[in-house]
Image 1: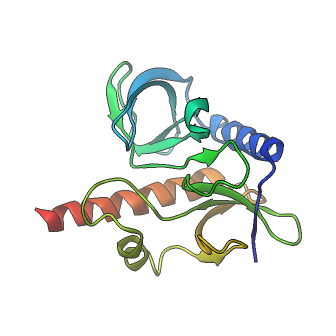
Image 2: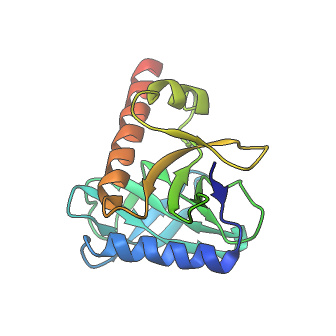
Image 3: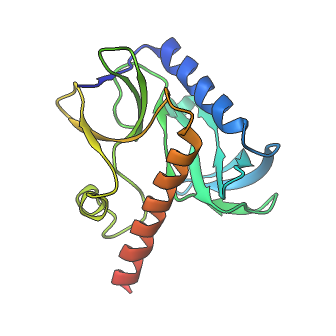
Length: 184
């Protein structure tokens, strides 16, 4: 069983660790205009990882979350970009609305989780994603009655965080491409 990290200071510490681990393999951040899943256009610094994906981070205090979009490739500077998915974290206690969570097991190991909910229109549902990735990703039960299962993206114990995130970005990109093709 995994336990969601609720303490705000602990979440901030783990978010800093996540950013530091990703920055180790990324270029210098540069600004783009990011179009979020709710349609907002947000100036944001992004970095391109050395293995073919980009990531960004911006604190949205008015929404009580840390916005963390990920995408494939490396978009040009000063352009409008859309992400493949957002791994957003709540910056308040007891809020499971954002898709990303940090969790610990009973031994104290830290994990990066995603709810499996994505923006993208008709057909992009949790159930459809679950069917698409049933043999590709592990689901884990957590200690919460409203969202009792999350996908494990990576353990922080391993140095594979970057590769695990890239794998997850690819799975989500494949899923969205497949659904959009089915929609026509």
